[in-house]
Image (cartoon, rainbow, N blue to C red; front, side, top):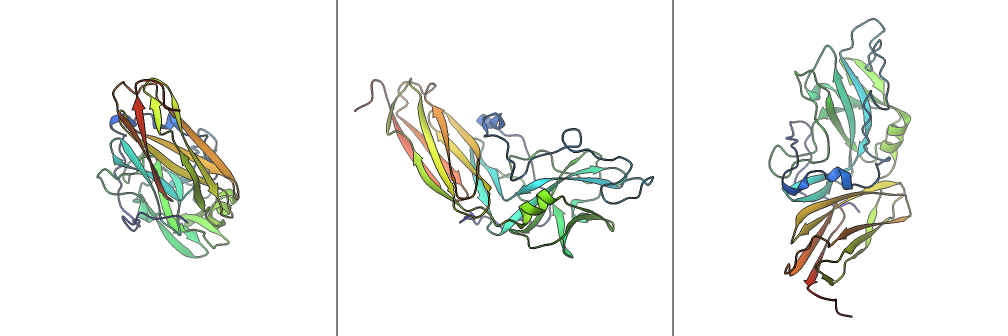
Length: 295
């Protein structure tokens, strides 16, 4: 069962301060698991999606200028947040998911709330949520958000129920609409994954100049494939988050292991690791010794 932290009801509209990661957080994407296929995967027109410049993606007839172009990029229901410059948490709100769309202004660059996702006649308005306005708990994993009155592209999200019970889903602006593709529609309709942490293992004692592993096993007991997000935050002697996105098919288990130790200096005393996810929190305290470990 996904557990919400209860910090907020996600915003329906507003501006989120998306900032570069500070302190030891830089470069975390290099340590992530393989790209995620069941939730948000960015697709820009220059990469894997071709946009026909003679026809607006919002339904403008050929020959007429496009107001904006929409490129749907995926669906996501959990998110990483900075809690300090050197640690992260994961949040999800039960029953909620977000559709992410890359917006390319052409002749118009209106506010995100002018865009809508229409599901069987129900309108869900564009937003730069989830996230908080400033502060340390800002969203950390997405690229630039869309900005009104500017010419650059950026993402806009639509907050919808999870799962979404709808036959037809369209993106709309100024009375023109574009249907989302079947892949995104299938993701929206699928029941959410249901994760359980089966084990979180770490040694009780390690030698300061030898490597060791901290491992996590997670099971998806739900009916749909999903992505389990977790941050393993190290506190001592180094301070840094170790972010992971683990794709787990329905009814299966997956393991993720992190290797540490070579950089633990002599006299550290203890290394602490805090596992943070939307489903559970775990902690491990490891004693760092000078010589061989006890049998």
